[in-house]
Image (tube, rainbow, N blue to C red):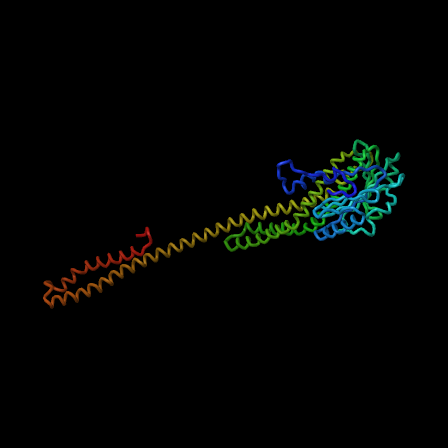
Length: 444
């Protein structure tokens, strides 16, 4: 937090490490965060003007440059390059700037004339005139008037729409807060605080909390249009998943199951893409709604007979929208889980079909292998006979030649007949040896 023209230890705490210890690079930012948004003491009569603007990275840089010029023109230092909060004295009050994740807020508090009526003319020197450069589209505009308590509450309530008027007491009845959550002629939500004995610190804290409620309840509603637009798409995906599940019950065969798995994979991709696109806004909506709930709880409201409290009114008007957002988020999460379970079931069926197909293929291969073995054995038998026939024939010529040369004492035909079994045995042994030599290990 940087503060111009108002040096205060509470606003700009100095964070140091104990002697002898090296601090973490982000220690100052982390420790100082708890002091980043101190409440500004306020006394009636006073007015608060609060605005929140949507801002992307380009808008943040442009806005920081504008705020730098704004502060320098008034002799005050601007925010540092990494600052997320800055306060500058302006027009008898303070102008507070804050940069959040997706929006920027400007809040000015200044004095009102004594005896000024609720929501009377604004001071002409407030900062949101023609010279103000808004960083992005306006999301929130609120006006809070802090006035001394009137004797007649009905007179103060006359400034609001009775159909949506909310009246609550806080701080044990030390203040009455009134609003109708409607905009005035300048487009600002009107909030009236009637001081019945607040301290200056309590008044500043209450005004800030009420402005935060208005800011975050508006930001939370950004999720509703998205949820409404996602509704038909989620319904379509639910119907498609139901159709795939129904077909799954009747589908048989690898081809049919693979077709269903492809459809389901495409559907799951759509679901995950939809969830990814919506996750940030839905998450932010939930976070903003929780902040509103927390701020309302801190108020510890007490109702005024005949009127709604802030909490009851917002519960009646805003909670249905939040339930719509949460309902869409839960439907998408459930759709993702169901698609995942169905896909797992389909993959199991496809795996079973593949195993069956592989088993059939292996059986077919085994049959072919057995046939090849039988054929090989037949060929081996024929080859033994054929080779033996040729060898015996050659031996017959040898025996006849030996007989003519008077080298063979027996008849060549007798010698050939005797050689036949020997040749068969020898050829069979040679063929078997060759087969064993080429056979894989373990198949000898």
